[in-house]
View: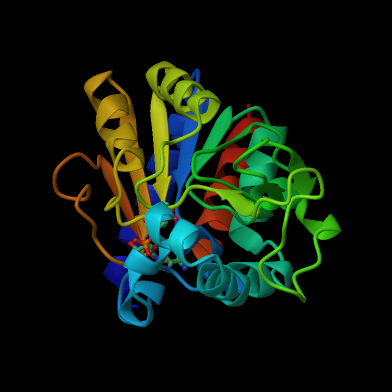
Length: 259
Ligand code: OAD
């Protein structure tokens, strides 16, 4: 990286750290790029899942019509990959920021539970979670670890209905709690960190716009510009979450310690 780029990035990290130190309520809004360095593929972009698989297969209609094929796909793409993944330095940096009371809520589109594994406690899972499996008929919830996926598709022990992963498929509504909690946190935010998301999927993608309209500063961390960057981003930190977040949190820490 040329010297000027490096020093510009250092200045942007210092400016962002000052904002985080002064802010009353900081929200992180995260997407698949947050977990890319944990080995979980993103959805879009050159290596993205939707370049290799048809997202139509993960509409709720298609899953319900062909549960065996749907389960085989979600097992291969999500359950097998995510169960082997660990938090990366970006996740741990956000956990440290929460611990320092400089991050108040994470709204994540990810289902991988890596924010919680890293130590974050206030996490709104906008698209649900890989950690549980639900019966769409009687609503019985099963911890994923208790459901054998060797014989697909799995069935409800009570009513024999085919179970469904407890995450949001295309054309499915966002869980009411998640929607309301995300909106409330967004409206409280005076700084929103937008990390590793292309901002392509509604309604999640509207949250940074709502925050900005409500007066929040938008800080974006992403190696590629997105639909937000020119339009609403105040500070664009161009790079990987696992690289930038630890530097940012170290800077916040040094600002707090020099008080
Ligand atoms: P996308 O795959 O659309 O976007 C991933 C973003 O992460 C891109 O902007 C990349 O440039 C960026 N990125 C890649 N590596 C990164 C890294 N190391 N650090 C930071 N950023 C990086 O994923 P999402 O925006 O999360 O929905 O997609 C939103 C939703 O689309 C997902 O929640 C899922 C999917 O279909 C459902 O499952 C309902």
